[in-house]
Image (cartoon, rainbow, N blue to C red; front, side):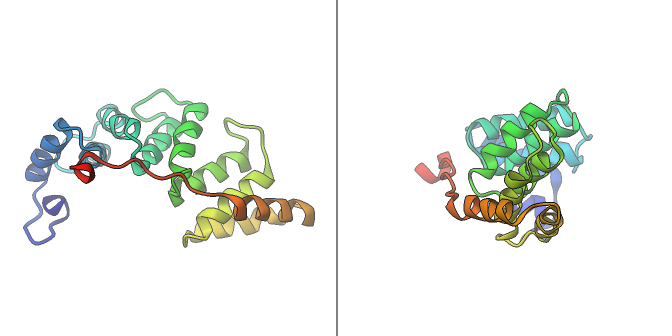
Length: 178
């Protein structure tokens, strides 16, 4: 990570890639996620969304919330994987359930638009509220916008859902267990 972001050392994507590959070969979910980011953005490598999705999938299968969220976005857009709102929602939901604000916003957006699920303002509002509670300004704007077409009873129901929601713990990484 130090080489990837230039923390305390000169930024060196080749060196970051080398260390991420070492970690990924040992099963480290964060290293696998970071390889996904590198390939998705083309940082020091040729951009390759198929390779990015592969690395995200490996980390997502380990329960790594950021990888689950990014994999959901790839399925939603059809980048590196076949476009599938159903699979996008599946991965967003796994990350959202671990309190990932970006994924919570994306789940809300899918319910607001009816992509992959029946359109549902109450559910959308509750997910936007959860994301907004973590400081996501876009989620707050989306929640407030959707509230304009909701009844007072629907807003109350959405707020009750959000208040009653509890995150699921993110799986521990191998490096945390040792």
